[in-house]
Length: 102
Image (tube, rainbow, N blue to C red; front, side, top):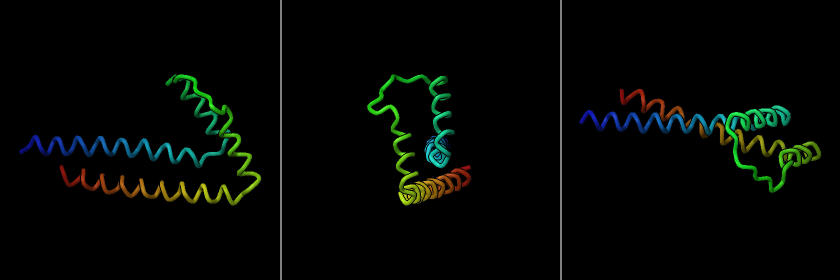
């Protein structure tokens, strides 16, 4: 029976870690364009990935659209805010279950 509790705790910790990674990725979207670009360049130095540029300045294209149409930025922030709140809710639920499993 105790091994079942350990497996449950391990799965909850893995889920919590995954949710934190998703939350950090979503929260990065709220940063200004220049900061996002700088973070991406630094992460490429640490975790190099294969180069795939179907459109090398896609982030800048979005930024230009947001500057021309502020309502698009509001809609994007609204969607991201909803996703962030949803993931935060899931994190709180997993955290409570993890504390109960102790």
